[in-house]
Length: 164
Image (cartoon, rainbow, N blue to C red; front, side, top):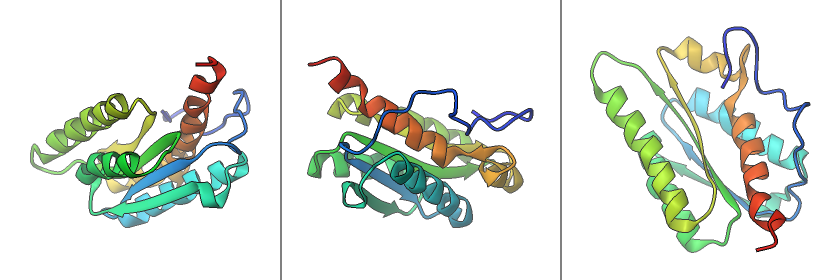
């Protein structure tokens, strides 16, 4: 996670395997589109940069962050993928809605991952305001979409590396 001190979207210290042989799904929320669009571009570009083939990346748009879980479940049920990246943005408002959505999405992503025995990556920004979200979607704190893509590549490589 990015902090006020630095951007953690730098993976120069991390061994990232080639993504050439993997298939990925990206589920992206259309709510807060300026933010989620930047997250998507970061994730998609990072996958390509690390060798993923365009034809091995499937993108699905869903209305909001709450629908990321069902989008991931539908996609994993329909396609043989190595990892799915969920991208969204929930900005704190004046009601408890923020907490309900954030908890539901985080728990849902975990449950879908366990159900399908595949990595489902939580690339959802949960910020106090729009400016914080923009800082984390390609701004001064990096791009959480890039972080999610690198995480997906690394996680996709775990099972094959165990020779199971």
